[in-house]
Image (cartoon, rainbow, N blue to C red):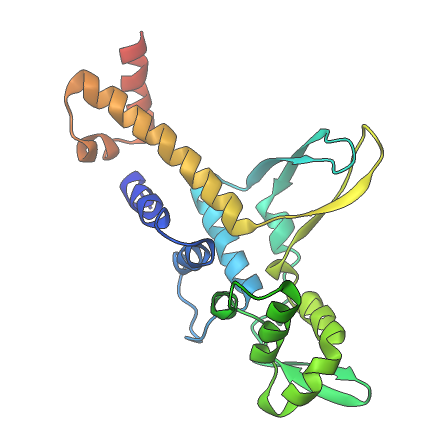
Length: 231
């Protein structure tokens, strides 16, 4: 993927809602042979592979302690998250035993989340999501087994909603924070695009070249011209 391609993705992504943007990122990796929507964790793994392809494996982030608001600098690897993925995540159906009955379900997808009415209270939205994933003949029993189903879904697809276990050195507070893969990647793409557009403006203002001509340069050559302009 070259600079012009990624800039086009940024431009398109600005017009999308977060879930649709996540689907866009997932679709940028090689297609899945199943042809069906992917479980959220599998989509997350694709986004992590995309992130590694674009920006490398190292992930630097900052989290704030909920007790004292101290800033914690985080250093992670893409592989740390990929290692958490279950091998059977792409299985068509999963099951859990609740009160002597086996309930069958599939793992939620990004498409399932998009289909939920955003005006629903969290509890109702959760129920709607579960009912969309449980097999037809088990839906009547699913209402009374939400806790067990949610636990099994989280166990089966840990990358669907990854969390980081952190501790604050300042106050010794232990807490967890969610890591939204799509949102993090989007912020990185936005920052990269802003820097690139500023570089294009600087070079175009000095040499009169078009955006396409500047984007066609390798990053190294663009930097050389920027250094000459600023010398």
